Image (cartoon, rainbow, N blue to C red; front, side, top):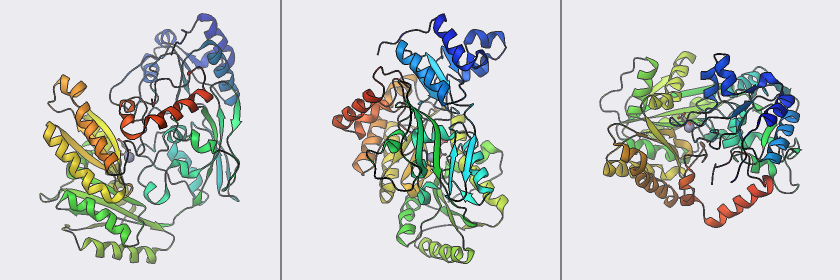
Length: 472
Ligand code: MLT
Ligand code: ZN
């Protein structure tokens, strides 16, 4: 793609749209001692990648974004939309420089419609703030990625983020009814209606969700909500063999139970996270992995009955003493350990693969990953949303040479992804393709599929200015 550089005239025009206070440049950041904060717009949570933006814009609403897009479309200036920067595939990195368009000021919960169990929000609202706001009126927004305390709903929409509750409640895309979107050419559209059903033409809503900011900039979203489940039970189940932990997952579902969380943590994942958090945790020597199983619902007696069924299933496996968390504090601590595995792994240098297979193939995936990593001589830390067959495979830098880290890992990663596809799975369950996985997309998608996607991109964004260089 041939892009043009920003000129002083274009900067002046951008200032006229969003106001000078919301046009950030490296020079201005230098002058106001905010260089570090400015540089953060050039990174996200993906490895240690950095690309310098030429300018950062903080528009207030769809109308301003529309004017920005018209200008950038006309001048062929690349625009990289950005939420909170918690993405794990490099989707928010401004690899062509140009404009970083931050949605941080679009941060309002516009309406919680208690009659219809819906809410209209802007994309810069933090996931957990939204969850808490709807909970106050007895409602439930389930998608809960590990970074829920800081990630924006807009970023969740970009990747259809999941999280532990996805196993029972689905991912972000399952809660979206309607989106207001600014197209790369500047038009503002609504994709659908605020209805639970819609058979009116192509589903542009679902096309936008998961498009990683390449087709449009979401400026409002209408979510459907659920009644808040009043009770939950959380158990931590230690297994003496990793393979058995993976095998037990589908057996629980087969027994008729749909847990609201079913997380796999290999021993070291839990230990690293507890150490990272400063929590004293002693895992018995013979324990190789844990399942963290949560049940939720409106009827506590019913939940205890379900817990008994889970126990009955687990009797068929070599498990240690099951911990039934009985206080809110104990539950919070267990979830805190689970949610911080990613952060603890990041503290070591790592590459993360977001593998996903049909649930019952999880044992085969885990076995294959360990076989590949042993054969190539690197360490992996595996954990993730076992109930979804979604295993986060973290490759640890350890003593790997620069050559192996930068080039040599391509072959084993390819083998891991080929295994996923062979097992009926794919190469990303919830983190997206973004920048770092795009070299592997051909393993999961045929050239015909990719050409259809390129065609769609071209219809929406004929000049290719929006989030260039992502997905394919
Ligand atoms: C998780 O499940 O913990 C996240 O998807 C992965 C991460 O934050 O690294
Ligand atoms: Zn995850």
